[in-house]
Image 1: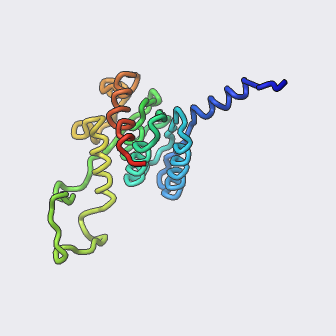
Image 2: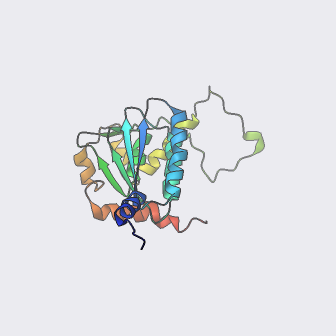
Image 3: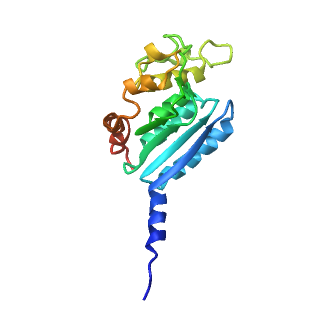
Length: 207
């Protein structure tokens, strides 16, 4: 007679259903961020029931990396629920990653902060503008338009889906304010945001 160890089976199944992913926030470490993004894709490819992303550190994630993480999370399996856990205060583009969780956790004394963009209203190219070859010119470091700042402006647009950027940019955002917007400790809002900004879009992505 073969004996099946159901205890070990349940432990293995539990580990598959819940995974933790630590994302350290450094003052500047682009190489680390790129490496962790690849590991995040592999973790999501396993289709865990829940993936908890722990955010910890005093730096910030570059805007382009935050937008890339956003695209990865929004194209995950419909079976995977994302929990974002802010173990430190978060700033600028890193705030967006925390907001993308189906459920969001934040240390009681931690804060969010995102600055205004320095990009002028005319700094972004409108999608309906018609471009002619003779009108284009190469960008160089002396130009007023900063491509990285353009990415950050896109990050603010995404943050604005959750928090009013115009009113809150440049201010420290504490836990009571997050509660007022239903971003923590509100299961009903968590479910709505997961449907509106995450898993409802997965079905539209071709496989």
